[in-house]
Image (tube, rainbow, N blue to C red; front, side):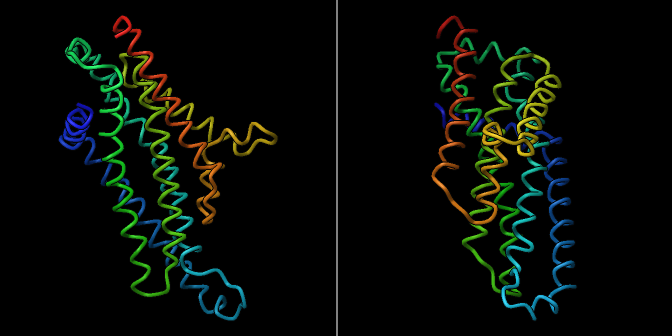
Length: 243
């Protein structure tokens, strides 16, 4: 049932014209930054060649691009998640799903994995663009893989957060702004000091961004995603009378 719901959500997302507009905008932004970083790197390549431990093309181009993609996805994902539940409530189609013989867990996971599949396609398209570095220079595919993993985990975290806010209201705009505000607040925690800083997803993403894969960072993302999915499941279960 989860797979069926995920396929339905993926199809619903791709048939919406707004999805294609947002995808086109994302690819344009990413391609623009990619070419800009490439041009900056080529302009200083002669100077870098004279250095003993000069940064390579991957760390100079791919890593900053992953950071740009992470920020853009933080802003775009709430626009996708607001459609998952809040818009169904507004369109009076949510009651059909909640009265069907489907558990709240199946509903939440189906919608989450449907959105995550689309986000994975977006990230894969950007990864292909970054991997094109190998056509003209030596590319560190380990660092690229670490960055792609970090962006994917970050996107999954924002998707789980946005899905939770989408379950709280029937106004898609409210759900989008709520998810975006909390996402931005968590991102700002990176600039704080002390133990509260570790609560920021971006702090853990930065480790992956430089190629450092730590079990602590992976556990953080898993707990973040699972935590918000469980909150969403519990909210819908209470809404359905404990079913």
